[in-house]
Image (cartoon, rainbow, N blue to C red; front, side):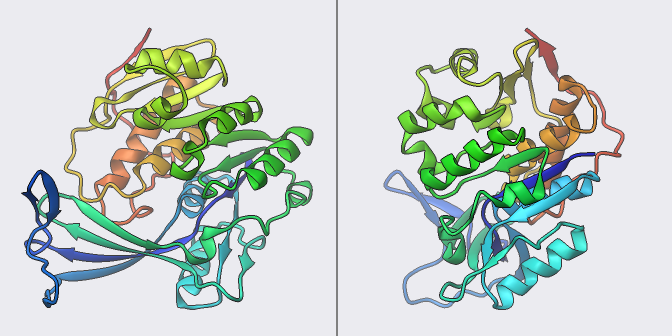
Amino acid sequence: MARIVSLGAALQDVYLIDHDDLTPITISGSTVLGKVTVGSKVDIDKISYNVGGGGVNSAITFARHGHEAIFLGNISRDPAGSLIIKTLDREGVDNSYVNFLERKATGVSIILLDTKTGERTILTHRGASEQFGNFSEDNLDLIQPDWLYVTTLRGDLDTLTRFFKKAQSIGTKIMFNPGVKELEQPEKILKLLKYVDILNVNKLEAARLVPGTVLVELFYHLNGYVRTVLITDGAMGGIAGNGEEVFRFGIYEDTKVKDSTGAGDAFGSGFLAHITTGHSFKQSLIFASANSTSVVSKIGASKGILTGTEDLHPMPIQKI
């Protein structure tokens, strides 16, 4: 098994779940929440408290797979932070490198979820997960991880660069899943990809970095920067290659989507969790797809995360 550091956000996810009042409708070409009007009171059918954030979601995937998972992120000493720590403890994730910020609240997402359509609207206060510059890359010297798994650092490329350089200097491999803020700086991100071993993006994100409109075109452009590239395209599946093999794949199952929160985290971290246990590239893509499918079939970004011991059925996947 591997020692894997997850560097990224930690949030409390509060779900407000309803079967009719949040149903989306279209007005003047824009999709809006159905029966929610300014000044009104809306009765919500159910409320659910969960944890989320790319750093936490990925760390839980690694821990459930049996890896030594270490989470590196910011929270505060408040009820939301306590829930995150309790969850990490329960999942067997090392949280000894968590930073507690005194003047920031733990990040919280309010997720308005319509059970009829699976559509959700997310209101996020990032709080302590807004910043990452307080972290020292010297933590990697202490941990000596096999892998550094990085999700969004809210566009903090200085911290990203420090961690990438440190990881390379100590022989730690890097998997990177950039977020919106990183992709707003495509030229700088492309320069940092020389440190990255595995890049995980969706089709729209890939198109922010390199020219192209179809998956194969985007893949080969990114493959010029990173040896192993994973590009997902929602219900259309995706494409992935490692310099030796390239696969075009569909979805694992045509299942009802209850909540798409955490789908990307489940795919990327699921792939790394599986391939670092000695599975083949193809097998790891199948597990990543199954992990993502399982996550979206349940409410909450971590409830459906698999363990790697499940019997998986075949899925559409073809070597090209």
